[in-house]
Image (cartoon, rainbow over all chains, first blue to last red; front, top):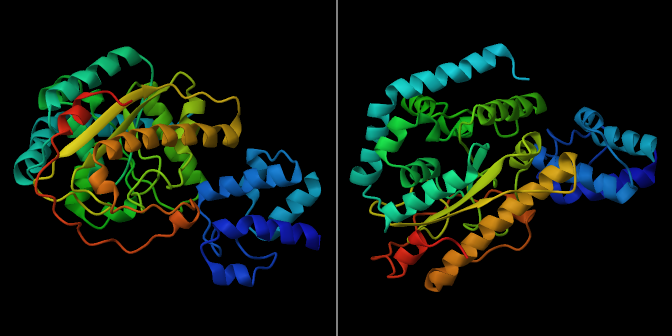
Length: 80
Length: 292
């Protein structure tokens, strides 16, 4: 697990997470939708920020599979 | 492609609502105009402008995008845009809506009303598959040249203003799926509506503005959908600015959070705003004139 990518991912998600308590103790298993209560529209914003921040292109299929912070880190690490 | 059973369900709903339209439209016009006492200066002029814009749009798919302050905004917009006879003659003019299921599911009469009023439920925070299905249904309806009404904010304006409200991107997705689609932007607000709530107060008088836009974006995918949604929100924001320019007295009591992310937090519903005794004299100008 790339800790630098993990920190960047959490930083990007932070403004969109409605559950601050869960965010404070976020791990790779934290579910973005259920635990952090990020809705589908704001999740699109997050994916766009991943693309901008890491210089990636994330397909709809790849984005659809993202559930946890760990999924984000794996995807970013794979595409970088 | 929408599955056959979903297409059948949509056609059935359209047919049942059409059959019931004479009493249903009469009932909700009675509720709005007589029971609630709502009115709009120069309604005839406004409806003429709506007809002109529809003619201008031609046979292209048309999406109505409006600001969202109360639970009955779609009813109010439908009433303001067309008369009783217009709906009886052309049932497709009654726009399809997508209310949040939790607001209506528990109440059977409300569910029936929503069904007859051409509503398709959506579930806030639903799964991706549910969301895709809803978009596909609306795409199908647009291909049938039915009108649909979407509130791009996705929920009632927590700030009371379209400016500062974060958009949802479904409307952008639809515009991408149907590039020939046009958007009819509608800004409606009662003179006494300081912020969001359940329903406007009785006797409310409404100002309404409408304009047609053809969204376009150089981007594709979700970035394009976001771009289009932002363009529509900007257009509605301009119409809102026009409203508040005409009625600056009311804007003094409204404050808008500047952080769009902070605006997604849902504050408790405010109490009904102070009653404003009479509509400003400039009301006619707003109802009649196209937005600047």
